[in-house]
Structures are given as structure tokens and as C-alpha cells.
Image 1 (cartoon, rainbow, N blue to C red):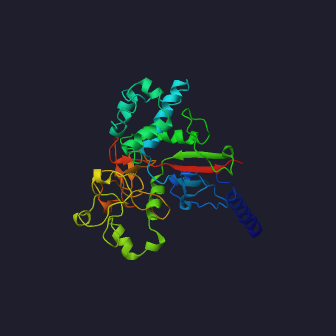
Image 2: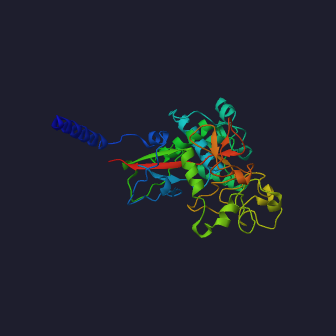
Image 3: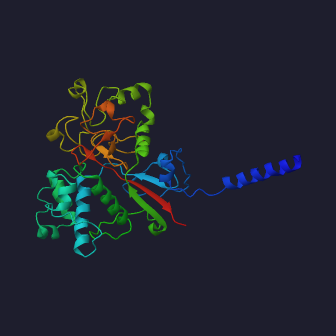
Length: 334
């Protein structure tokens, strides 16, 4: 009798061991939805992608990259031009969003004053090129301002545009460059919003090693450094706003026009970067996450003490304090 019991137990053990070795086919998103700890993949060689920062703390089966700044007005104007040209050549992959007086804009976009007069009719749009758009926006001093007044759906369409730009098939001719040492066709490239979990990780890793002190951490939670100077663009206490500290880099444009911190958006990169080389993870504009209706990081209208990992901002429509920043996931296709 004991022999049969022993054989039965041994069979159960062997079956359990075999089941445990079955491959896990769940996607990173599925794993995240199950609230399991993030799996950090080991990547021996990480491609360098111009204009993106590799953030190893986000890595799962994919290698994760983050755009250093929020999507700018110049980035958005390029995207709109590409949408127009794609529609015109008979590839209706995108909805038609130029000129501005159409149903798509009325539903998804606020009036964007910085783009006023850029395209008034079809003829003027036909004459635009990426170079001419950049020249116009630079002359207005607005090219590096974060784009705001954009809906979640429109921002998601921008992600698709960026994805195909790495495959070299955009109608506007704007093709972003992959590391020349790698064949992009051998990689799966996905551009999307960060999840709330991923954004929390970015906020958690805000501190730079040389300023990772208890005092610094206490002060930055309120939005100022050890010298009582603002560290990012958010609503600050009056004693900070009215101090003698320079709000932003001396070279940042439009500071005189826009005033001091917490009153309107600043150009991307006006404040110092975080430990990863990312700008404005806190403050400036709240940034959309993959969870529609939830933004994180806080904006210029947010109290500095609320631009933290513990806070999120809800939205139901486009707003002047709301922008977005893409993350890119790449995985080699074997």
C-alpha cells in the first residue's frame, strides 16, 4: 500500500515540475495587468536610437526607450503634415486633419494659437515642407513648447506615425533613424504611451546620484532645491516664486514673455534633466498614460508637492495643461 502511495506522490511531483517548465507566452502588458513584479531583461547590447533615452528600469522582454521631452509643437506640425500628404496620395491610413476647420479637429483638438495661419487652405498646405514648417515655428519661438490641447485619440495616432517613421514609409519624407549598426527590419518597434506603472518608475528614479540626499529628497518633494530655487515648472509657494533664483536656464526662450514658474508652459529642456537625461518628468505639462483619462507628473498649474509618484491627474477632454511623451519598445525578431 505504501509503495502505491509513494508512486502516486512521485507522479504528482513530476507533473508539477513539467508544468512549471512550460514557456510563459503572456505579453508584458498581460503580466502587468496581473500586477506581477516587472521582469528586468538582461540586454548585452542595447541599440542607440537618436533622440531617445534607454531606461533600463523599464525593460521587460522589450528594450524600453523614452523621449527626452514632451512632444513639441514642431513634432506635432510634422505629424499633421504627414497626415495630410498621406491622405492626398490615396493612402487613407489616417483621418484628414488639415485644414483646421474639419470634424476631426472640432472633436479632438482645441484651437492651437501657436499654429495659427500655418495652414489656412489646401493650397498653402501643399506648399509646406518640413523645412518651411520648422523655419516658421522657430521664427515664432514656439518650436520647443509642448503641444497641448490634444486628445488621447489624436495623441495615439501620433504614436503610429512615429512607429512607421522608423520603417521609412512616411508620406512627408520624415524618416527617423535607427542605430545604423542594426537592421530595423529585424526588430519589432512599438511606440505608445507609458503605463501608469512605468511613469511611476520614472518618477521614482528622478534623483541624480550626486544629489540623492535626505535633505534634497525632502526639498524636491516640494519642488525646490537646497538653495530654495524652483527645480521644475509648477505652482510654487510665493516665497520661492518671488525669490532671487533664476527659474530656468538663462538660454531658454520666451521666459520674459511667459513670466515665472507655474503660470504657463515652458519650452522643453528649460529645467535640468533627471538621472536618466529626461526633462520635465515633473511639472510643465501633465502627461497622458496608457490609461485613458489618467495623466501623471503634474503640470504648471499643479502644486509642486503634487508632482510626485503618489499623484495622478484626471482629464476628460483636451486641455492646455495636458501633453504627452512617447515610449518606444523594441524587440529583436528571431
